[in-house]
Length: 323
Image (cartoon, rainbow, N blue to C red; front, side, top):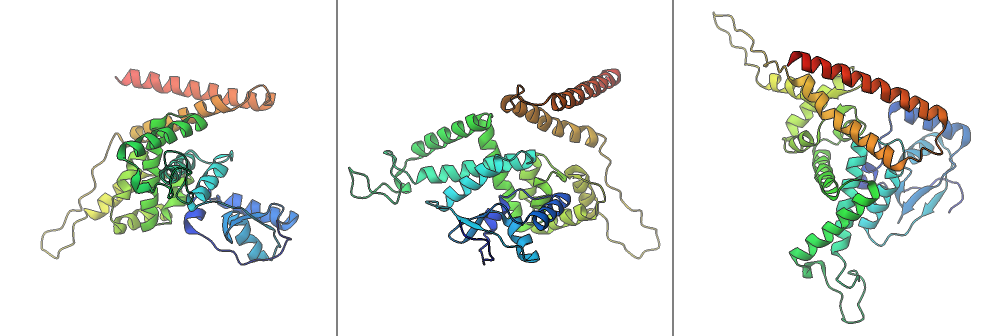
């Protein structure tokens, strides 16, 4: 680890996008902590490129706060991505959207890293004892790749307490987000922070839109005063905007065509949100040690769950009453 000073470090966009985006109040709190206490934790680098500490690096350089750096060694770019994802997934304050994205990215990175190894476990840079040249990724059959990918998905599923199928589903989610990020990078922090409420299926649909339409959605999000906005609402506004008739100068007044009202929109939005609550509860139940958690924390959780249960029962009663 180096002495505290200032260094010109490289920023890799892919690495930076794997770091959980800070909300405004979190960024301000980090800045205050750095001003008061200095930069206590070193900025982690690989070949002079930041792999952890992007926000600290930006704040420290702007406010002239010295910082230390610590060089890590990775055998490949995929290995660096795997480390970043694993490190971020170990944090408690990530959103469910960020968690899904990171698991998907880690799976993709480990999948590609696995393709570089031959059947005896030697990678592309090493010679096996039996052969003069190690097998290349092209030597792997389709069946070999599928089996390798299946084992990778199973292992990550065990690690993160989800099914192997869910791991692969998260990979498709991460691929869709990366496609969106190439066209409109400003949308990614909105989605990963949970500010823009959008389902897995709609993320995939959004990734298939043309850049112009994505930009329109992004502008709608930026104009919103609410703490979050749903995809269905912004998409409906854009659809109405696109279908708006061109004004013509005629003797007959032109009647504006309004977008059709969707009575199921609110219920559909709630239906898409509930699985994330279930996932969060299941994850906490699997990973938290209730024997060491304070009584006050357990009491607050119990109170919140009871309130949720009561609200759910009321909603069920309303649904049955309307049936």
